[in-house]
Amino acid sequence: MKKSLVMLCLLLSMTDRASGNIIIENSWVRAAPPETKVMAAYMTIENHSLKAIEMDIKKIISKGFTKTELHKSSHNGMITMEKIETLSIKPNESLLLEPGGLHFMLINPETVPLKNTAVEMLIFFKNENETEVVRIEAEVRSQKL
Ligand SMILES: [Cu+2]
Image 1: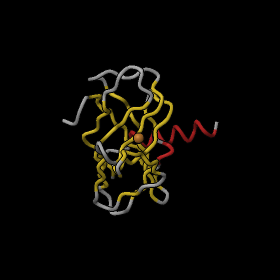
Image 2: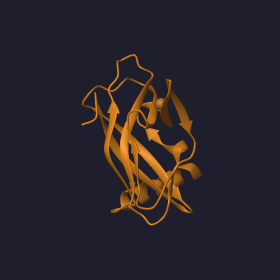
Image 3: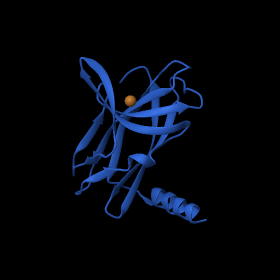
Image 4: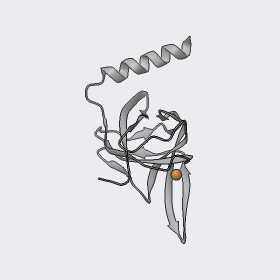
């Protein structure tokens, strides 16, 4: 009961929010073969508020996937991926998730989404006592537009 109330408040605040502090643009998911177990999502996340906003990484939902993580790729002879646990975006700054760098890792698809379809994601942010949720539809493509 308590949980469903929280969810309801969240939904209300989502629809209530005409102009949010966070704007997400150019989101896409890299197309992958049908047997793949992980997919990467990329986007630009802009903080238009006067405060630093923290991404609430553990809450992030990608519809049709078991879980979503934030990773950072790096090249030090080998290409490796590191899981990021906390991340905040400074006032009026934007964060770029792009191939070879930061990305959302969408894990365990029910069925791998096809090219030209979209993956619905709910991306959560928080600062002090506020929560902001941004819903996006990231298009599945072979490469950045
Ligand atoms: Cu990854």
